[in-house]
Length: 180
Ligand code: IMP
Ligand code: MG
Image: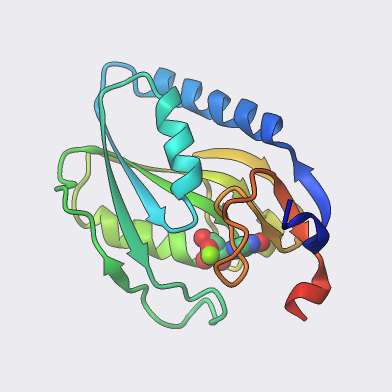
C-alpha cells in the first residue's frame, strides 16, 4: 500500500470505522423517525463518510453538496465563510443534516450553521465523522460524532493532506516529516 510509509499510527481500522458509521446511521434513523431528510455533504472531505452513512439511514432522503472556503488559519473574529458551491435544493421547511469529515477549530461549521439557519430549515443538525475537541476556537457542538481524535494531523477516510490520502481506508496520523 503506497501510503503505509507515510503514516506513523493507525487510529481506526476500516472495520472500526464501518462499525462507527453504522451506529451513527442507526441513531439518525431513530431520531428522525417518520421524517424526510436533506443530507448535505461538505466537499470534498465528507464525501467518503457521507456515501457510507446514507446506506445506514433507513429513511427517505435526498442528498446535496456544498463547497465552503475554509478560514481554519484565521482568528475567530475574522471573516465570513464563503460558499463556493451551494446546494441546488431548497432548505426551507426541511430537516437538514450537514455532514462533515472533521470538526477542528469549529469555525467553518459554526459560521455555516449561522448562514443556513437564515434559510429557515425545519431543523439543522451536524454529523461529523471525527471531532478534535482540543482544537476548538469557537464553541461548536456536533449532534452526531463518530469518534474523537487527539490533536494530531490525521488523514484517510476522506481527509487529506495537500489533496492526498483521501482514499486511505483507515484513519491515520501522518508522519510529521511529510508536512514539515
Ligand atoms: P475547522 O473546524 O473550521 O477548523 O475546519 C475543519 C476542516 O479543516 C475540516 O473540514 C478539514 O477539511 C480540515 N481539517 C481539520 N483537521 C484536519 C486533520 O487533522 N486532517 C485533515 N483535515 C483537517
Ligand atoms: Mg480538507
